[in-house]
Image 1: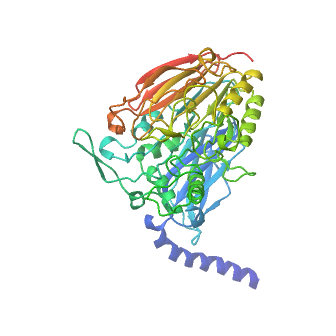
Image 2 (image 1 turned 135 degrees about the vertical axis):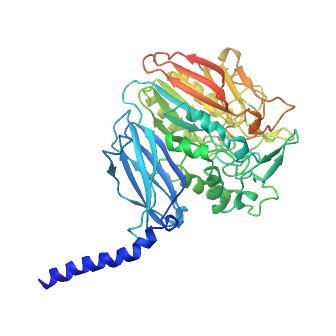
Image 3 (image 1 turned 30 degrees about the horizontal axis):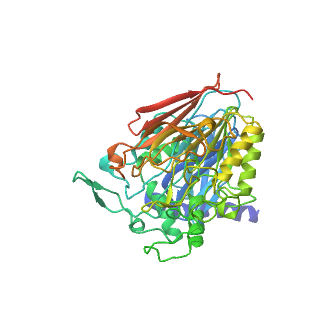
Length: 515
């Protein structure tokens, strides 16, 4: 009896005492843990996806998931910690969801020091991949906050994300250059017509990123844009990286400019990689932590092969090797073997190869002097250097045979459609295929680039400013994204290239070939 009495007394008086302390604490929103940069979802498949958020302090992320917008059928998931070691970010894999289902999730944070204190919830949504042959729609592009063109409220902010959001796509394939870690953001930029572009600024973006916190800040800067946060809350992301997540044209041979006090490119890449993985809702590899390349299956009609053309490449050089070896690595042997195996085993109608760099556009390591190679292409003629990987892969696809491969890319800051014709190629052991280029989403517009004839690309469409008008600001309107629709019944794929005003610039419909 005494034990029960003491316990009852403890619960009564204890709860009252805690309530007296907690109530004033709870009465001020600033005293509750807050979500600082919206919510995101990503790497969605038929039965689940990853949810991400960031807190403003050490906290536990609490997630509820439902199949109705009212959250009437919500189930609460076990909490996970958001700690200083991850810059208070947390991501959770939600599993055991029905296929082809609109899923609603609600995220809030609970203070680690005061377990009764919870912040306001933020709601997001995604749709799981279909188990049946329904329609699929997605958008893609790359290049965000580059060349000093940051968030300008007077220009509508990162307006391209608002245009993409209108299409209610199933997912967004981000083709890299998610940030420009090497690109400071000034408060003002004078335009060619004398007008002033005014950027939102943060202290960390006043210089190139070198520390882990500076890399993190570059990602967080983008997430201050209202258009991007609204987009992220509704559209899951399949993300890859390219060079500017670290520094321009980085490889093991990178000679860092004077702006860098940290001179070790591998150290910078390690810090940048950690920030990248913290800031996006990616499924993480158990066998290789930090791996970017992965296959995402989005129903019977679509497999997406997300490549990593940074982590395994050899040093940037002339790219003229006459035999395949470490100097010519771009994907590298392990990733090549993974890609071949995945393509061979895929039963999806379409196999989208998400390449963060184009196959045949010349991208120079030293653009000012047109020297060195940054991408696959090195100039007209037979297969050399990094092109050995592409030749080997295209030959494999033909011989397997593997049908209905499409390449999607960005990087070059203009929109284009390339049809690869073996009859016009130096290397001819492949079946015809398409490569589509989009971007920038919010960066300077350049191009068009020079084409390499090794694999016979025919330029069927191009939208670029021309050689006399380079690095156009987003306000010039030449910001681009691609939109893909796959018809559930016929399996036809329609690819449309659009600008930030959502004007359809060019489109084609591809009929699937029978295996």
